[in-house]
Image (cartoon, rainbow, N blue to C red):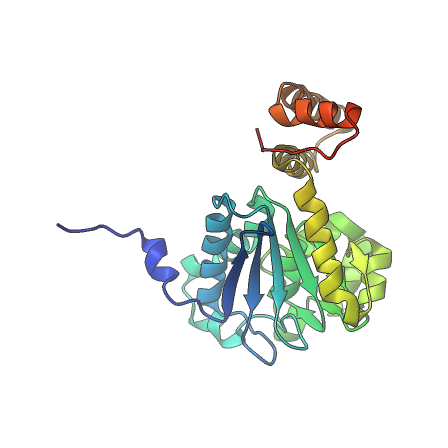
Amino acid sequence: MTVLKHPAQEKLADLDGFRVEIDAKQKRADIVLDRPPFNIISMAQRDQLRLVFESLDENDDVRVIVLRAEGEHFSSGGDIKGFLEASPEHVSKLAWNIAAPARCSKPVIAVNQGYCFGVGFEISLACDFRIVTETTQYALPEQKLGQIPGSGGSARLQKMVGITRTKDVVMRSRRIPGKQAYDWGVATEYVELGDLAAATDRLVKELVYFSPLAQRTAKKLLNDSEDASLAAGIELEGHCYSRLRSSDDFREGVEAFHGKRAPKFIGS
Protein backbone atom coordinates (compact mmCIF):
# COMPACT_ATOMS: atom_id res chain seq x y z
CA MET A 1 0.00 0.00 0.00
CA THR A 2 1.39 3.39 -1.00
CA VAL A 3 1.17 6.12 1.64
CA LEU A 4 0.89 9.57 0.09
CA LYS A 5 2.78 12.31 1.87
CA HIS A 6 1.90 15.96 1.86
CA PRO A 7 4.77 18.07 0.40
CA ALA A 8 4.98 19.88 3.73
CA GLN A 9 6.13 16.69 5.44
CA GLU A 10 9.22 16.57 3.26
CA LYS A 11 9.98 20.25 3.77
CA LEU A 12 9.78 19.86 7.53
CA ALA A 13 11.79 16.65 7.72
CA ASP A 14 15.02 18.57 8.34
CA LEU A 15 14.58 22.08 9.70
CA ASP A 16 17.06 24.53 8.20
CA GLY A 17 18.61 26.89 10.74
CA PHE A 18 15.99 26.67 13.46
CA ARG A 19 14.26 24.28 15.86
CA VAL A 20 10.86 23.98 17.51
CA GLU A 21 10.28 23.36 21.22
CA ILE A 22 6.80 22.60 22.57
CA ASP A 23 5.99 22.78 26.28
CA ALA A 24 2.48 21.32 26.52
CA LYS A 25 2.29 22.05 30.25
CA GLN A 26 2.91 25.75 29.68
CA LYS A 27 0.87 25.64 26.44
CA ARG A 28 3.82 27.29 24.73
CA ALA A 29 5.79 26.66 21.56
CA ASP A 30 9.18 28.25 20.84
CA ILE A 31 10.50 28.66 17.31
CA VAL A 32 14.21 29.17 17.90
CA LEU A 33 16.51 30.57 15.21
CA ASP A 34 19.72 28.58 15.61
CA ARG A 35 22.30 29.38 12.94
CA PRO A 36 25.03 31.17 14.89
CA PRO A 37 26.50 33.67 15.05
CA PHE A 38 24.05 35.84 13.09
CA ASN A 39 21.10 33.48 12.50
CA ILE A 40 20.93 34.20 8.78
CA ILE A 41 17.57 33.11 7.37
CA SER A 42 17.84 31.03 4.18
CA MET A 43 15.30 30.88 1.37
CA ALA A 44 14.30 27.32 2.29
CA GLN A 45 13.96 28.36 5.92
CA ARG A 46 11.30 30.90 4.98
CA ASP A 47 9.12 28.14 3.54
CA GLN A 48 9.67 26.01 6.61
CA LEU A 49 8.88 28.82 9.04
CA ARG A 50 5.53 29.36 7.32
CA LEU A 51 4.68 25.68 7.53
CA VAL A 52 5.70 25.49 11.19
CA PHE A 53 3.48 28.45 12.09
CA GLU A 54 0.58 26.81 10.24
CA SER A 55 1.22 23.52 12.03
CA LEU A 56 1.42 25.12 15.48
CA ASP A 57 -1.79 27.00 14.76
CA GLU A 58 -3.53 23.61 14.54
CA ASN A 59 -1.85 22.18 17.64
CA ASP A 60 -4.23 22.11 20.62
CA ASP A 61 -1.30 21.83 23.05
CA VAL A 62 -0.12 25.31 22.05
CA ARG A 63 -1.75 28.57 23.08
CA VAL A 64 1.14 31.02 22.60
CA ILE A 65 4.05 30.98 20.14
CA VAL A 66 7.42 32.57 20.89
CA LEU A 67 9.85 33.44 18.10
CA ARG A 68 13.34 33.85 19.53
CA ALA A 69 16.98 33.14 18.72
CA GLU A 70 20.09 31.59 20.18
CA GLY A 71 23.10 33.78 20.79
CA GLU A 72 23.83 37.47 20.74
CA HIS A 73 21.74 38.39 17.69
CA PHE A 74 18.18 37.64 16.64
CA SER A 75 19.02 37.69 12.92
CA SER A 76 21.21 39.81 10.68
CA GLY A 77 18.81 39.11 7.81
CA GLY A 78 18.48 36.81 4.84
CA ASP A 79 20.92 34.84 2.74
CA ILE A 80 21.91 37.55 0.25
CA LYS A 81 23.25 35.18 -2.40
CA GLY A 82 20.03 33.19 -2.18
CA PHE A 83 18.04 36.05 -3.71
CA LEU A 84 19.98 35.79 -6.97
CA GLU A 85 19.64 32.02 -7.05
CA ALA A 86 15.91 31.86 -6.29
CA SER A 87 13.31 31.64 -9.05
CA PRO A 88 10.92 34.57 -9.62
CA GLU A 89 8.07 32.34 -8.42
CA HIS A 90 9.87 31.63 -5.16
CA VAL A 91 10.72 35.29 -4.63
CA SER A 92 7.07 36.20 -5.15
CA LYS A 93 6.19 34.13 -2.05
CA LEU A 94 8.60 35.92 0.28
CA ALA A 95 6.04 38.27 1.83
CA TRP A 96 3.42 35.51 2.17
CA ASN A 97 5.84 33.27 4.08
CA ILE A 98 7.02 36.02 6.40
CA ALA A 99 3.43 37.10 7.12
CA ALA A 100 2.73 33.69 8.71
CA PRO A 101 2.84 35.04 12.31
CA ALA A 102 0.16 37.61 11.43
CA ARG A 103 -2.10 34.97 9.84
CA CYS A 104 -1.65 32.62 12.80
CA SER A 105 -4.74 32.81 15.02
CA LYS A 106 -2.70 32.49 18.22
CA PRO A 107 -0.65 35.23 19.94
CA VAL A 108 2.94 35.39 18.65
CA ILE A 109 5.76 37.04 20.61
CA ALA A 110 9.04 38.11 18.96
CA VAL A 111 12.00 38.25 21.36
CA ASN A 112 14.51 40.59 19.73
CA GLN A 113 18.08 41.02 20.96
CA GLY A 114 21.10 42.28 19.04
CA TYR A 115 20.84 42.62 15.27
CA CYS A 116 17.33 42.35 13.90
CA PHE A 117 17.86 43.29 10.28
CA GLY A 118 16.06 42.73 6.99
CA VAL A 119 13.85 39.66 7.08
CA GLY A 120 14.60 39.31 10.80
CA PHE A 121 12.91 42.68 11.36
CA GLU A 122 10.14 41.91 8.88
CA ILE A 123 9.06 38.65 10.51
CA SER A 124 9.20 40.35 13.91
CA LEU A 125 6.91 43.11 12.61
CA ALA A 126 4.45 40.38 11.58
CA CYS A 127 4.26 39.17 15.19
CA ASP A 128 1.78 40.52 17.73
CA PHE A 129 4.26 41.51 20.46
CA ARG A 130 7.91 42.54 20.30
CA ILE A 131 10.18 42.57 23.36
CA VAL A 132 13.45 44.49 22.96
CA THR A 133 16.54 45.28 25.03
CA GLU A 134 19.33 47.85 25.11
CA THR A 135 21.20 45.65 22.59
CA THR A 136 18.42 45.55 20.00
CA GLN A 137 19.04 47.16 16.63
CA TYR A 138 16.21 47.14 14.08
CA ALA A 139 17.00 47.92 10.43
CA LEU A 140 15.83 47.50 6.85
CA PRO A 141 19.22 47.87 5.10
CA GLU A 142 18.19 46.77 1.58
CA GLN A 143 19.12 50.15 0.04
CA LYS A 144 22.76 49.21 0.60
CA LEU A 145 22.20 46.33 -1.86
CA GLY A 146 20.33 48.41 -4.41
CA GLN A 147 17.02 46.91 -3.27
CA ILE A 148 14.00 47.63 -1.10
CA PRO A 149 12.38 45.49 1.62
CA GLY A 150 10.50 42.65 -0.04
CA SER A 151 8.69 40.84 2.78
CA GLY A 152 6.35 43.51 4.07
CA GLY A 153 8.84 45.47 6.17
CA SER A 154 8.31 48.98 4.86
CA ALA A 155 4.52 48.54 4.63
CA ARG A 156 4.14 47.25 8.19
CA LEU A 157 6.54 49.82 9.61
CA GLN A 158 4.71 52.68 7.88
CA LYS A 159 1.43 51.55 9.48
CA MET A 160 3.10 51.74 12.88
CA VAL A 161 5.20 54.90 12.71
CA GLY A 162 4.03 56.86 9.65
CA ILE A 163 5.61 57.76 6.33
CA THR A 164 8.20 60.27 7.59
CA ARG A 165 9.89 57.92 10.01
CA THR A 166 9.61 55.00 7.60
CA LYS A 167 11.35 56.95 4.84
CA ASP A 168 14.06 57.87 7.31
CA VAL A 169 14.61 54.18 8.18
CA VAL A 170 14.18 52.63 4.71
CA MET A 171 15.72 55.24 2.41
CA ARG A 172 18.74 55.81 4.68
CA SER A 173 19.10 52.20 5.87
CA ARG A 174 19.05 53.69 9.36
CA ARG A 175 19.07 51.56 12.50
CA ILE A 176 16.48 51.90 15.26
CA PRO A 177 17.85 51.16 18.76
CA GLY A 178 15.64 49.17 21.10
CA LYS A 179 14.66 52.11 23.32
CA GLN A 180 13.73 54.22 20.32
CA ALA A 181 11.67 51.35 18.89
CA TYR A 182 9.77 51.24 22.17
CA ASP A 183 9.29 55.01 22.21
CA TRP A 184 7.99 54.89 18.62
CA GLY A 185 5.50 52.15 19.44
CA VAL A 186 7.25 49.48 17.36
CA ALA A 187 8.20 47.44 20.43
CA THR A 188 5.71 46.32 23.07
CA GLU A 189 8.16 46.15 25.95
CA TYR A 190 11.70 47.35 26.65
CA VAL A 191 13.69 45.37 29.24
CA GLU A 192 17.27 44.84 30.32
CA LEU A 193 19.00 42.05 28.41
CA GLY A 194 19.31 39.96 31.57
CA ASP A 195 15.52 40.14 32.06
CA LEU A 196 14.62 39.15 28.50
CA ALA A 197 13.77 35.50 29.22
CA ALA A 198 11.83 36.36 32.38
CA ALA A 199 9.87 39.08 30.57
CA THR A 200 8.98 36.60 27.84
CA ASP A 201 7.84 34.03 30.42
CA ARG A 202 5.66 36.63 32.12
CA LEU A 203 3.97 37.64 28.88
CA VAL A 204 3.35 34.00 27.87
CA LYS A 205 1.72 33.23 31.24
CA GLU A 206 -0.41 36.36 31.00
CA LEU A 207 -1.68 35.49 27.52
CA VAL A 208 -2.36 31.84 28.38
CA TYR A 209 -4.60 32.98 31.27
CA PHE A 210 -7.14 34.52 28.89
CA SER A 211 -9.83 32.78 26.85
CA PRO A 212 -8.27 31.35 23.67
CA LEU A 213 -11.50 32.12 21.82
CA ALA A 214 -11.46 35.75 22.93
CA GLN A 215 -7.75 36.00 22.03
CA ARG A 216 -8.31 34.62 18.53
CA THR A 217 -11.26 36.93 18.04
CA ALA A 218 -9.37 40.00 19.23
CA LYS A 219 -6.37 39.30 16.99
CA LYS A 220 -8.47 38.73 13.87
CA LEU A 221 -10.66 41.75 14.57
CA LEU A 222 -7.67 44.07 15.03
CA ASN A 223 -5.90 42.73 11.95
CA ASP A 224 -9.03 42.90 9.78
CA SER A 225 -10.06 46.37 10.91
CA GLU A 226 -6.62 48.02 10.67
CA ASP A 227 -7.47 49.68 7.35
CA ALA A 228 -11.18 50.11 8.06
CA SER A 229 -12.95 53.39 8.72
CA LEU A 230 -13.95 54.14 12.29
CA ALA A 231 -17.56 53.30 11.53
CA ALA A 232 -16.64 50.00 9.87
CA GLY A 233 -14.28 49.11 12.69
CA ILE A 234 -16.97 49.71 15.30
CA GLU A 235 -19.41 47.62 13.26
CA LEU A 236 -16.95 44.71 13.04
CA GLU A 237 -16.22 44.98 16.75
CA GLY A 238 -19.94 44.81 17.51
CA HIS A 239 -20.40 41.63 15.47
CA CYS A 240 -17.46 39.97 17.20
CA TYR A 241 -18.74 41.02 20.61
CA SER A 242 -22.15 39.61 19.79
CA ARG A 243 -20.70 36.21 18.82
CA LEU A 244 -18.63 36.00 21.99
CA ARG A 245 -21.70 36.94 24.04
CA SER A 246 -23.04 33.38 23.59
CA SER A 247 -19.72 31.58 24.18
CA ASP A 248 -18.98 29.19 27.02
CA ASP A 249 -15.91 31.22 27.91
CA PHE A 250 -17.87 34.43 28.35
CA ARG A 251 -20.37 32.68 30.64
CA GLU A 252 -17.46 31.20 32.61
CA GLY A 253 -15.81 34.63 32.86
CA VAL A 254 -18.96 36.23 34.23
CA GLU A 255 -19.61 33.41 36.70
CA ALA A 256 -15.99 33.44 37.87
CA PHE A 257 -16.11 37.22 38.34
CA HIS A 258 -19.21 37.02 40.53
CA GLY A 259 -17.89 33.95 42.32
CA LYS A 260 -14.61 35.72 43.08
CA ARG A 261 -12.55 32.89 41.59
CA ALA A 262 -10.14 32.41 38.70
CA PRO A 263 -11.91 31.48 35.44
CA LYS A 264 -11.26 28.19 33.66
CA PHE A 265 -11.55 28.97 29.98
CA ILE A 266 -11.94 26.13 27.46
CA GLY A 267 -11.91 28.01 24.15
CA SER A 268 -15.55 27.60 23.12
